[in-house]
Image 1 (cartoon, rainbow, N blue to C red):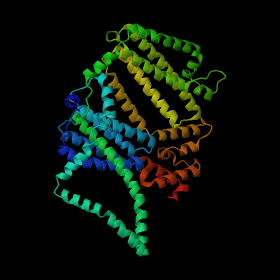
Image 2 (cartoon, rainbow, N blue to C red):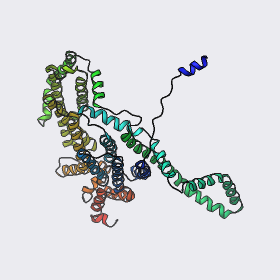
Image 3 (cartoon, rainbow, N blue to C red):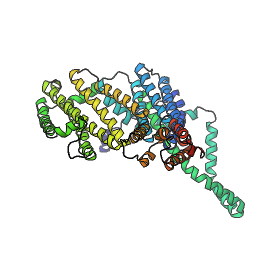
Image 4 (cartoon, rainbow, N blue to C red):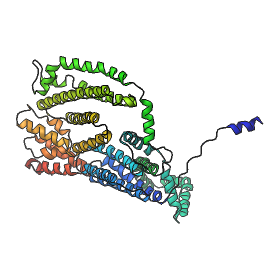
Amino acid sequence: MNTINNDHNEPTKAPEPSMPIGKPEVLFAPVSLVFGLLLVECIFFHMTTLMMTFSVMGTLAAGRLYLRASGFSFQKGHNLLFAVLLVFSLAYSYTANTFLCVLTTLFEAGGFCFLSYLVSSPQGLSDFCLPAALKQSVFQFPFKNWAVLPKSVSEGLNQTSATKNIKYILLGLLITIPLTLIVTALLMSADEGVANILNGLLNHLLPNLERLSWRVALALILASMIVGMLYTCISGRKIRRVTDEDTEQRLSRMRIAPGVLLCAGVVPICLLYGVFTCSQARSLLAALALRLPEGVSYAQYARQGFFELCALALINLGVITALKLLARGEERQSLPLRISTLTLCAFTLFILATAFRKMVLYIERFGLTPLRFYTSWFMVLLTVVFVLLIVKEFKPHLPLFKESLITFVIWFFLLVFSRPDALIATYNYEMYQNHSLSSLDYGAISYLSADAWSVLGDKEDIPYAYRQAAAEELGEDGDTCFNLSSLLAHRALHSVKDLGNHE
């Protein structure tokens, strides 16, 4: 009797949600495997090529067709985002900068997930809900429903008449493996010619089999992520979508701090910024006035406190975010809290302006490097975000996250398609020609991508050894790095007489 009661009281496990497989899944599964193989091959060996561009475009187009076949339509905003992703895919065949191409790949992956999420969303999302939706679409959806890919492939095979014969063939080959190995060993022992042929065949196949195996394994993982993400978008299986109501409930649970408490916490920080500004006024204003404090070199002045100032700007962004998230609902727009936010934004803009001017002075003295270029790019982006925060205080209905996202996309587009290595090389070369730089670091230039040599390859005053090394590297890369910049660099390098004979 006790046994019966225990069994009766045992909690029952929730049934696994069904996974219906339709015609779109059956058709898309093999396509995703093909593009998975292409993307793995391109990411590891052909990142900066036209092949990578076509692979990304093909994956985006296949995903779009799958969503449309599943009954979802693309609105005007969705088409615009899709066009943006297509444009960014041209970066692989435009620039030879591998670092930017890696960033573009991350952007494309995140954009593809977010686009699929928005297209399949049953209702529109408010601006305050978009960060949670972006996080869910990128970090949760691709890791759900991986079983859709094998099940779709199995369903597709079951629909073909030749499936049974294929199974029999595979089973027959599997059964005869031991017998085949015994026959192979006996033949190799009996005849040296057979042994040489089989050994040569194995020596050729095994390395290729190893390379093929990890490519196929990664392609299966990537295809499972793509199919699983899209299937999760259209079905909602194993996940609960972010909604405005849920997000508002989570935010309301966080809004527990009185405005007076938050403002009191910000006052010491603002006072410290005031003391810092007063004590360093002469030094800080020197940066904005394009002059150095007495007794300080360019290197000392530019490096002193630069990264600390950048860290303070990021800390202030976190503090402002905390103010908005923790303040009680009725006090978020109170005058003291708004003054605190505006004060922090004003101090931060002053700090960013000072740090940026420090960087400009350092660049004017020692030239550009990729790190200095990317740091300057990030500071300008951060400045725009703080300006938007100030505007938000006067226009509460401003969609802050949407405007920040648009700003990032535009600014990232300018970064990728400006070919930073070409700009760095051109700037340093012109500064050296104008005697603003005492020397030109040819070693640093040689570490840049082919973007740099597309503008410097025809400069005969650059030592022959560096230009020859660049030409040889381009020749060794071959089709693994074939894009517009590589083509321009090749032509520029071989347009000079001393390298023209080595083409």
